[in-house]
Image 1 (cartoon, each protein chain N blue to C red):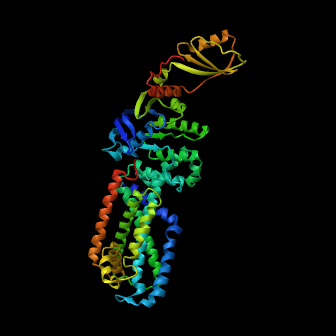
Image 2: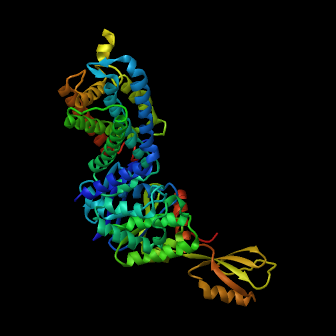
Image 3: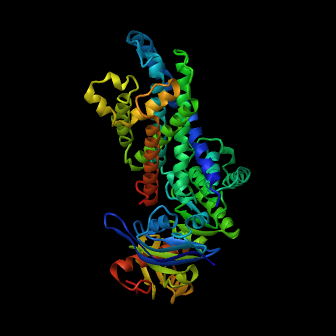
Length: 315
Length: 254
C-alpha cells in the first residue's frame, strides 16, 4: 500500500516561477522517508500541495489510495502536518489548540480529551496544558505543533523541518519520539536541513532540486555510492611537512590537524598503515562532514555544473 | 463524514474568543449606546416630539439596536478571520478535512452570536430609557437574525480579501457607518426633502432598520416583505461569493 503517490506534479506561481517541474514520488506505508533539498528547491511547495495549503497547477496526489482532488476530505483525514513555522493561535492555551484540532477532524469530545491528554503527555507538555501558547519556549511551541498533528492519529505524518531552531537535547528527544511513532505504524515524511537527522532516522530518501527529483532511493544504497570519505585527524605531535599518503588527498589545516580524503578502494586500514610507517600518531578521527551531507552536496553541485556526481576523482 | 463536530468546534472557538475579550467586544457598545439614548433620546429627543405617533426615544431605539447588531456581527468575523489568516492558523482548518461550507458556517455563526448578544445588551440598556412593548417579536428576531447573517458574511468576504489590517477597517469606517447613519436610524424618510427621499430608498440599511422597527413598534418606511426578500437575496448572493472565494483559495492559499 502506498501512503503517498505523486504523479507529474507541477506548480507555477503567479509570478511565473516554476517551483515543481513535474515530479513523481512514491512513499510506501510505514516508511520513514526523507525529502531533502536546498532552500527554494520545491520541497515546501510539494508538501504544501500534499497538505492542501497550495493548489497544484497540474498532476495528481493520492494519499492512502484517496485522490486529493476527488476524495479531498478522505485524503486529508489521513494526514497530520507539522509545518515549518509556528501557525497556531498564540493567544490560545496549549490544550485548546490540540483539542480544537481534534474537533476539526471530527473526534467526539470524550475521545478528543483522551487523545489530547495522551499527545500532550507524550510531548512532555501536560504540565503546560493551561499555559497561553505565546508564553512557551521555541522548543515547546514546536512540540505543541507535533502534538496537534498527532491528535487525530494520522496514518501519514509530515514533518517540515520539525527540529529547526531547537537545542540538541530537545532534538534528540524528538528523534526518539519520531522513531517510536514510526514503529507504531505511522508513515513519516521528514524534511530537514540537518542531514545527520535524515541519515539516522530515514530508510528512504528523495532529493529535490530546482523543482525536479534528482535522487530517489533507499538510504543504504545511496550511502554505499559514496566513493570517498573525508576525515579530520587530530595528531599527537606536530608536523612540519604535509605527509604524502598514497591514493589519498591530504591537507594540513594546522600543525596537529590533517584533513584526509580516503577513497573506498584505499580504506582506513591502508591509511593507518601508511601513517604508522611514517611514524605519525593519531589521537582521534572524525568525519569531516556527515556522509549524507557529502552526497547531498555532490548531487546539488553536480546538477548545477552538470558533472557526474558521485565518482569524481581526487583533485 | 460527520461535520457537525467540526462546525461545533469552530462556533465554540469563535464564541469563546469574543466572550474572553468582553471588555473589547461587549462593554463598548453598552456604553456608546447608553450615551446615544441619553443625548439623542432624552436631551434632544424631548424637543423633537413624535414621529409617526412614536416618541423620538421609542423611534430611535430599534435603529440603534440594529446598528449595533450590524457593526458587531461584521467586526467579529472580519477581525477574527483576518487574525486567523494573519497568524496563519487558518492552515489548521485548510489541512483538516473540513469542507468550505463548514468553515463559512462556523465563522458566520460566531458573527451572528456576537451581533445578537450585543443587540440584546443594547436592548437591555434601552429599557433604562424607554418602556417599549414589542409588537411583533417573531419578525423582530427574524430581521435581527437575517441582518446579523448578512453582515457576518460581508465581514467574512472583507477578511478573505484583506491584505493588511488597514483593509479590514476601510469598509466599516467608510461604508457601513455612513450607510447606517443615513439608513433612517435617527429620522424618518418623510423628514427628508423630496429628492433625498428617493435617494435614500437605494440604501439597503433603510430596509433592515425599518423592518426591525416595525417588529418593535409597528412603524415603518418600507414594505416589510420587500425588506425580507431583499435581505435574503443579499444573503444568498454573499454566501455564493464566499464559497467561491474559499473554493478558489483566494486570499488564503497560494
